[in-house]
Image (cartoon, rainbow, N blue to C red):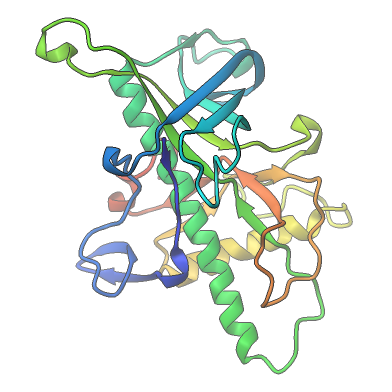
Length: 287
């Protein structure tokens, strides 16, 4: 199990040699998430394929139970038998039918692993970009003479990891030497299901999807602001879109001392970019 850990509070964006980077001042290459076996956590995962949480354009989602051999101090997998959302990549046989009615075809183990790691990079960067956004807000408020006369929502993306299931290697052919059987994107479970799930900002429109006056309009409006801030701070390189998540927690007044331990949870973002260098990191549909 490879856990996604973002740490953008010490990151900054900059331009260098016509390429955009997220990293420290001495970074020489674009940073991205990889599933490093040397740092992976051993454990078990039970996937309830009979309980379908939903099916999207590229992934199906199911309930699951995660137990890591050595429980981490924080993040995903801190408790045994933890309830999680297990997502698996797929492709459709026909593009002319709705996703929920299409026939799901799974990728080969090698392709599934590669595409799942690509999808994990979306969450990795999305978490870093959101933390980077709050760092900019913190900096501005620290120099302001008064606090703003409005609420600043507390938001974060779900904690996640990549689970790689191995099996005994069969055959002597060099093309059949991998022990990888399946790969899952494992996410923090969002309680409430579809009843509490809201799409705040569409990937094809920079305006809130909710109408002014609706209960959660202030969250959608704030997320539109984060897009402008990210675009400005990255010199037009990247910003988050297709912003969606749970609605069962109404954020209280934001404060500089708040740890954001309780927050509205976001998931399944897209990274919008015009840079080919960034596009190489992300899945299809984010350019």
